[in-house]
Image (cartoon, rainbow, N blue to C red; front, top):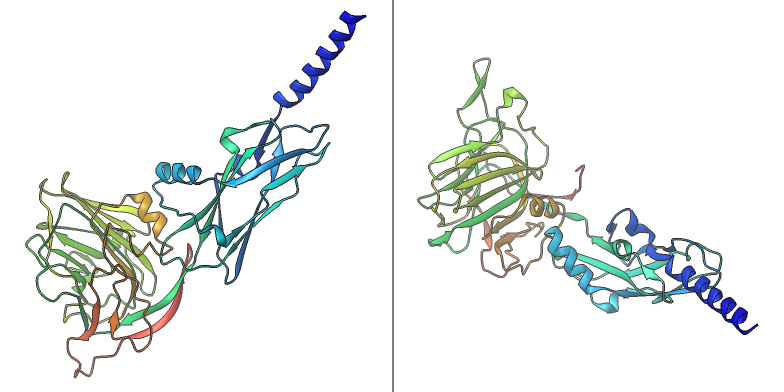
Length: 386
């Protein structure tokens, strides 16, 4: 009788252990994707997750949730992102969630985030399961990131013929860069004339960016609806308009130019995709003496422009693509200058938000010209289909 009793107790213990050991707990959303983007609202942003079991239990299961900074750091390292964790005071969610006996999942867990100023930084909420009554977590699905997306909606200046600007200081910068990235959003009203220059760095290596050149023609007429980069004694561009690569008037484009002296390689990106490259002598740094915009007297069409960023690093395709539709952190130490150009009506200065002092005075080459017009402003939202 004693031996029989011991056998029953042993079997009961094994059954209870197997019910736990043979089960797993996880965040349902993490089983399909590791992140979910939610658009930040004016007051409170809400997201939700669901905690689930692999199979039902005969008793309640309580899971503990927590903000997992280590999971956020690991994600940033793996994905070339720089998401930050908001201050805890802005985040609220239940730290414990219960899956009732016989149920496969708990009720959805609401995560509420009060609005806060981002100053260009990108934020994410990393939620992980800490423990759950001895049930093992599914390691690949026990953490989930709620990525906060602040839409890039801003006032944008439209620069007209004879608007000319130069970032401070006015004297030669003498900046020697073995690596750089220059990126911006722009929209041209037309491509009616050659040599409509939007950037000029000066310096012996020269970074001169313009719309048009006497390169492509059709039916005896030169075509100027392409972007050309002149640098390091050579040039490359967005492609032959007659081969379907032409730019469209009144359409927004995001452009980025990168350079790496170690390989002598310049890359050109359009809307987050690399479309052209140029290889010159290795080991030659870019020399930046100034950053002048709309400097050519031949600039005749109107151009909307914003989000001008000059970096001292070669940004990757992934970084460029991820940063297109949002601001970037103003205090990022890799930024040389950052001109959101969201200053608005009446502004005479475009602020360099990095604090590096490269503010831009809005100027005019020929204020007395009958073709001159002052800068005008309009609000745009930048999204996948802007």
